Amino acid sequence: MPTFYLTTPIYYINGKPSIGHAYTTIAADILARYHRLCGDEVFFLTGTDENSQKNVEAAQKIGRENDMQGYLDEMAGRWKATWKDLEITTDRFIRTTESDHLNAVEKFWKTVETKGDIYKGTYEGWYCKGCEAFVNEGDLVDGKCPNHLTEPARIKEDNYFFRLTAYRELLLHYIEEHPDFILPKSRRNEIVSYIKDFMTDISISRSSVKWGIAVPGDESHRIYVWFDALINYLTGVGYGTDEKQFEKWWPAQLHLVGKDIIKFHCALWPAMLLSAGLPLPKHVFAHGFFTIDGQKMSKSLGNVIDPLDVVQIYGNDVLRYFLLREIRFGEDGDYGHARLEERYDSELANELGNLVHRVCTMTEKYFGGKIPAHTPHDISVAIKTYHMGLEMFAFHDALDAIWSLVREANLLVEQKKPWVLAKEEKTEELAQTLYTLLELVRVIGVLLLPFMPKAAQTLLSKLSASPASNVTLDDLLVWGQLAPGTLITKGDPLFPRRETTT
Image (cartoon, rainbow, N blue to C red; front, side, top):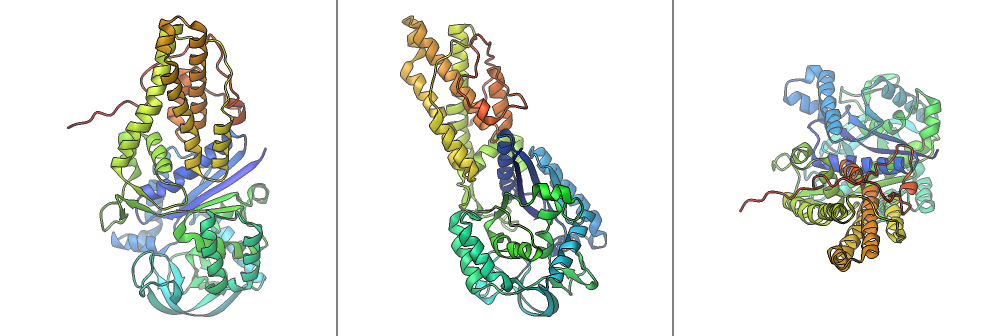
């Protein structure tokens, strides 16, 4: 069975999850569900970065600095509960304070040290607390971090360094030979330019912080949070604890990240892996930034959205659909509650929900609720577009393919007018039309399973077409799965129209 290992970033837990965190995690969940349906064995990893100074500062603000582990346990539990409420189907939730991760980091450090790629030196320069990153003068805009719009601190420390520049040519060669390593492709030039012109050896320890993983053999230093955090992708599948499992799953097929951390994932991380003698992940995909009604999402503006607040009103499926439909994956996008309501009304309630309800109603009215005789139809173009979209993480293309079938079915209703066919007693044409509509609805339901799992299952159950657990997507997408004579159940509308007030 083919394997598919994908990861989200591990998240800082100095606050509760926002809709931005949910966006990345939901996208990963859609891919995990898709690949399981395709018959792949999937490992889906997410988790929390607990050795960050941001977490220490958050604990200090509420007087919990002397109970760091207790604070982290509480916050990690909150994040875990959120992903459960959002019905995220992870295979492992990793925490960087776990003993497994400590073992993995120690093993990795010693491997790279033995290679001769770690040395002691003095770092003097800029450090951005928001990024938890050492930054070059050239990275600053008007003396400020472009991501956080704050002035970085000037620090001087004796630290351990990683020989990142030793891998400059190997990285450039790898990126050239593997054009799909960095996605979307628009990000590649940025990384190539950084590696060529700006990349320097990187400090990988801090002597001025007390929280974090100690450098093996030197308790006076804590490992720089990024050098520690990136290793979670190895820890999650058994590095340092279960070599058989690790050999099965590594390298990862996909790391999903935000574009603000792409340099760590496409320059530092691959160099670390090369140093440790490990293969590189197949793809790193960096999606864009979120704004909320045109403004940057921030605590100070008070516009941070809790995804569970949206789910409480609309349910998980609507949130999943909107996030991946509204924002072209890989580009910057804007979240607006008004836009969510517009898409719910126009696409979910009117186009899809109304289609399913009308087709079921006409089947009940004209055929006693039984599926009529089979008739052929070609859906190959939409199916091909759907697969290509999800294989290359273009969720918008996959959803466009689904909606092409939704609109084809609605157009067929308007063109054929089944109520006129019934009145004119054109029974055979009526049967052909309704079978085509019912089967189109079934295929739409199957294609929606990764995106809107509950709604898709409800739709398919109306047609008595709930898929068996051992059936693959290719099997389900063969035209003609609905058996003539099977009784359908109209039930309630799939997406009830919203009550509006004037």
